[in-house]
Amino acid sequence: MRIAIVTLPRTGGTVFTRWLGKELDFKTIYEPHWSVYHREAKYTEYEIWKQPNTITKWILDEFQYFNVDVTECLSSYDFVIIHTRDNLYEECRSFVYAAKNLIGSSWHMKYNLPSDWETLNKDKIDEFVNKFSIDKSNLLSLNGDINTTYEGVYYGNDSEKLSDLLKFTPKYLNMLDSKHKYLTNGKTHKTLV
Image (tube, one colour):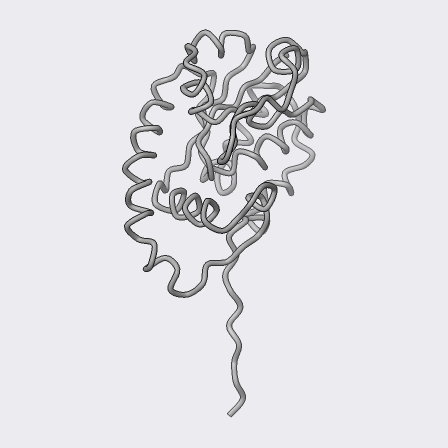
């Protein structure tokens, strides 16, 4: 079986893909042609399009960048998951912070926002809310076998719906625990008086 997860950045898609790959014991492929700084293939054509027992996480604009028909590409998969995030503002806040401050694999590390960072970057966040709302609408117009959300995976029952559809008994739900979120609350220091 070949599974595609199509999403946008900062939707929890990487951990979601890792979890599902572990549950099914499938090879995971992450964003085969997506990078903030450059586009380069990270996997072979066979791995991306033909290898059995794989889960490929796609960022929607990978298809747009290569000017290929997304529906045709997704037809090479047996099961397609359309994955979004309900809270677009939080998604864009995370994206703007990551784009400005995190490099490479650091995009998938824990971080906290400095106290004034959000206020200083409000215009940029709002700019991406406008862009991502269009991207999210395009994403939701695609046909998939199931639509999942960040909120449904990490706080709801989307994992249960998936396990029912794909017929597996989850063993690694701890990977989806919200304590693993990248954004952490900064520690406050109390001073003794």
